[in-house]
Length: 193
Image 1 (spheres, rainbow, N blue to C red):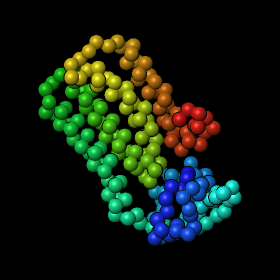
Image 2: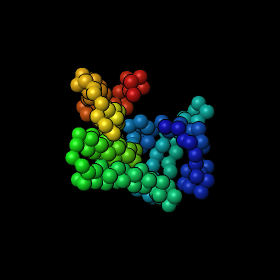
Image 3: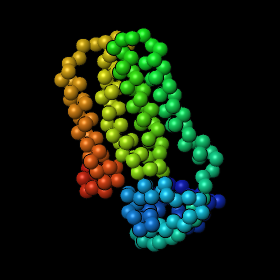
């Protein structure tokens, strides 16, 4: 990926510049490297293959802990995810029984899942990115389903639901079979995803 900014006080200062392109991390192509990040810790050395101005070079950088502000920013999606989860469970547990409670609960769970797994997808376990992409495919159909039932139920055909959820199943199938890393590594990834 492209280097967007470099902390002038961090270990990459003087070695990386904004606009550099990271080709490989520890010898692994950059697009396939995110699962490796969960195994690295502050103080570990990381070997990068960089492309700058058309030429390629390698550099080693000692990892540092992120500043407190960055850690706080990473917690925002998880806090919002927890709020969606609590609201969804609350409506299901304490709300009036009706056809709207189920779709609203599913919407809150998918929103919580998308936010939670999205926040860990690049720095967490390998499965985080896979689950994020699968949930993302289902977020649209679940939101449309909620819209058609809330605040009051509207008539819609089962065929429309089948098409929406069928599209979500087909779109998420590559992630289920290959995992997010396998999908990103495939030749057709840039065309489809």
